[in-house]
Image (cartoon, rainbow, N blue to C red; front, side, top):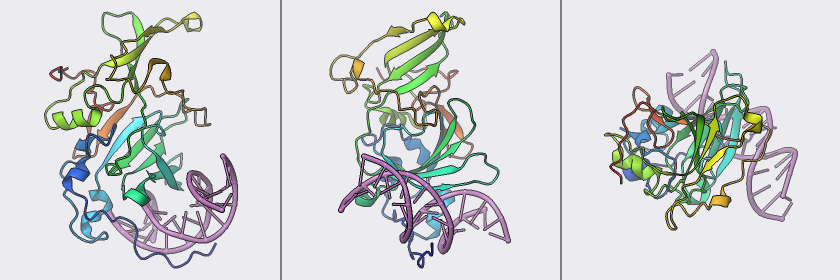
Length: 267
DNA sequence: TGTATTTGACCTGT
DNA sequence: ACAGGTCAAATACA
């Protein structure tokens, strides 16, 4: 296909992005870590100016088995084979980019061929579209309490969390410490024995009282994502890597690594 | 017919 | 110069 002369302006028109926008509004995002934009100043020059160099864009990395379900609507706009990468890289941008000037984008890089495959998702820019996140619980595999015989605990956390959401918490604790006290509204425990084929998972539903996590009713848990050929069925482990100097690793969404000090002062 | 995805070309940054 | 990121026409799909 003969491409017409390329447009003269690629669309990084975030010159008016305020620090607040860049930091993300806690009410607008359920997953985006505000801390991801530490040290990023609002661009002041033209979209093509040096302040908009790719390396200066706020970005953070998430390792996940479910890269397609993060609560926002994305439109794929590109795919590219990356040198020395076994799998192509997929490029997405916020579906509201056009009508709401939301600059959020993400790129997907499959890391391995496991079942399910593990993905590295690099998010760039906070959502400024204001679109309410699609309710979807954080499903996190946790090591069991030391005293427990359970082999694995899956936490189905409410995105709203009853604390005002993950982003808000991140903002509250940014630069200090993270609260890890979001209460899961459902947990699955799996035994550690090998007799899994006969074993029913134990349901521990501590569904929140009305008005807290009620956006996701008990039986209203989102159906498992369709088997889309990517083996993208269940998330089992997440982590964020913040692109801030020496890549600080946080736990999934708002959670600290397991060996972190827990702090419940949000209650 | 409208919208989303695919894909090759072009642009940008290193 | 090269690799990665983005655009937009072509194509697929609902």
